[in-house]
Amino acid sequence: MSNQEILKRSRILNIRIRRFARSKQIYDYRLTGQPLGGSIKDSIGPFPEYLLHGVKCLRSESGYCSPCGYSLDGYPIEKAKEKCVENSIHKQAMRIVKDFDRLVMKKQFRVFQSGKEKRIYFVVTAVGSFFSDNEVPLNIKSEMLSKLQALVKDSNMNVWMFVETRPEDVITYVEQGKIGKICDSLIDLNTTVLFGFESINETIRNLDYLKNLSLETFENAVKLLQNYGIRNGAFVFVGGHSLTQTEIVKDFENTVSYLYSRRIMPVVMVENLKKCTINHLLYLLGQHRLVEPRTSLKILEILRAKQVDLSPEPWLVADPVGGPPEPAIHSFKNDKMRTCNDCAGNILGGLRYIRKTYRWNDFDVLLHPEIDDCNCIEDYRKLIELESNLSSLPLEQRIFSNVKFAEQNLNKYFALLKNNSEVKTGEN
Image (cartoon, rainbow, N blue to C red; front, side, top):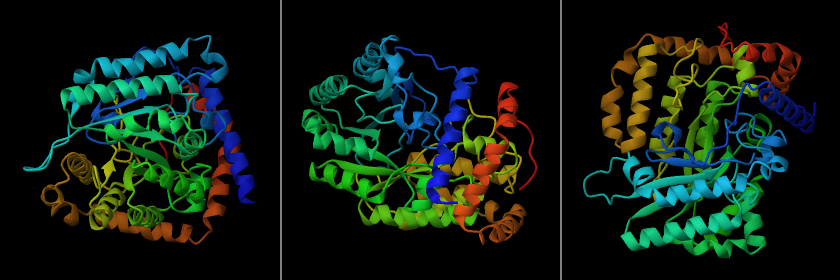
């Protein structure tokens, strides 16, 4: 099976799952005049994140980005006009400007150490890509950013903004000369542009996650923004439906090393199981194991060892559970965990503490020695040994096997979705 065939069949699977979910109202999207988000659990960091929603991500419509939780948000472009989506997006954007004190200023959870400059952080994104004019028209982007720019200057606030986008859309903005209409505002707002990169490994990035992103395109977008004096960050996904725990750790280490070598801030995303995805299908039917809490602990240890001094922060860590409401199944609460509930809870608490404070010494005190002395560490080691046999198969072969399994069990998964079942599954 060629990589192109795996890609094609994975995309078809994603499209069928997403269309089924919408047609059966497994997921019922509703347009509002308010931006979505604001909770620390919704965000990539200890500050508010707001989603300008209304138009579906074109890439999700094409079957890309397998684990994505936003793939069902928004209306297809052909329905956007009849739903007056552009008016709604404008209202959402202006709501952030007009209600900046309540929506942004009063939702700052970052704990700054004594003597460190205090900053006001927030994120604005779209369903798929902030730089996509299909999702956020240029006139709305320009108006929102210029008004935020004026607000910050008038009040002398120390604001640092993040936006999430795709590399291809940044390249298009530069090539078409659109970047000049928002560049000054982005710079004055101390903007960091975050890309969905996920992994330095081509197979993981483009066959497991289905990003359809070349390293050349990513590096081109980064260079273009750096030429304008705009900072860059990149998401690093921790998980994957066909990876062992050992491979997850190694891929994270390689990806973070690559990003730091280019002065790009990593944004860590521990897998957060989303309904109506290939990963969710495979999990419910016993073919997928989520990231172990002890694996997440190793991820944090790598981040600590490799971090470099970047502005505005050396890294960001998104909440690994998500919500509100908290999902029934996540990496720190599921029936396949080899990490015990007590240790899982301690690691989750430590992760949530460190993402707000960056105080590694306190992190050590929170976790040790209980984590190192617990009996579940032996269960975790046995899992690593068990998975070592699986990793002897080429990753492409494992991905294809999971795609084939998903194809064969698609109707069974649809039945589970219709019954709203979170079935118990056996161990891998």
